Length: 278
Ligand SMILES: [Fe+2]
Ligand SMILES: [Fe+2]
Image (cartoon, rainbow, N blue to C red):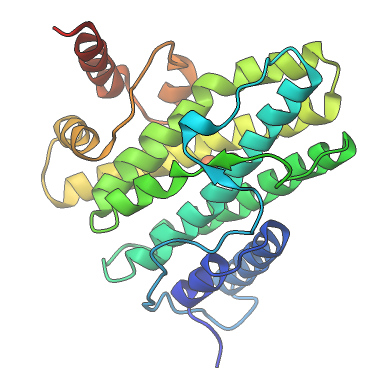
């Protein structure tokens, strides 16, 4: 019996090792797209029971963000720490995209929804491997340093709410990646580490698509419920997102990804007022 797409997702989520998880993720993505092109037997979406947390390797040690040591970004150790943090984010992103497929298998969605998240999961798998290759080329590896423990929080908080998941994961967290990646590319360009620059440039280009898929399916669901996307977005981010939306924003890339300023600026202003105690 061949696996359904949601069963494939669960297989990826329950694989612990990063290289093994991403290899399986890429194999399942290739099988899905071969089937979609009619080159193989069709794969059903199906339904499955995803685990509450994805399996993770023994290393890195997962610490509360407060306890993850900070390193100067201008130093070699700082650059390794930055790449390590990116690898951790990418691995988490692989799981997040398979999780949205597995977790919401009971919500009827057009087939394009699955195409988009399988493509994202495949790209995140590639991103993880590219960053691991760079880390290994400079004498480190994923698992050599501690990493943030709180990365799955957004998935847990929105496990029952597909629109909440879309608002928080692609439209807040992945959009944040668009804001910070150009600065990272600069750091590695100055440090003359062209392999890191090349990897981050691929990530930067492809992440625009991930935010755009989030925005597309968020708007699709708002349309189905006859709801105002901007109002719903604000309400869901207030309910489920516990971090701060902080400028500077990459307004150009956010716009390219279908995220207009009136989605995020009002939330950023609320954060600022809270911080000032107004
Ligand atoms: Fe990525
Ligand atoms: Fe992404």
